[in-house]
Image (cartoon, rainbow, N blue to C red; front, side):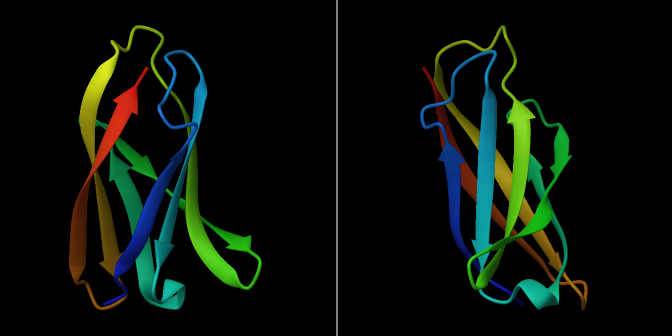
Amino acid sequence: MSRIRNVSFSPNPLVAGKQVQVTLEVDDPAAIASAKVYDPRGYELAMSPAEEGDTTVFRLSELVPYDADAGTYYATVVLKDTQGTVERKSVEIRVA
């Protein structure tokens, strides 16, 4: 299983009505069958592989809802590898 190394958000904190870029770094990108984020509303958002220098990462660009209240929320990153193993990680996100 490819392990999640890092999940980052830009900008951080998020801003209601603005785009957020989510970047997921993993140990072995070739072993990943799918990478998804479940936002605080429970919506499933698929991530796409992207080259970053010599590393492959997974990225997602999404609009933060205009009516998002300031505060701390949690999203869940879910990786599924080519053998069907699933890894989940809860990540804290802040909206300014």
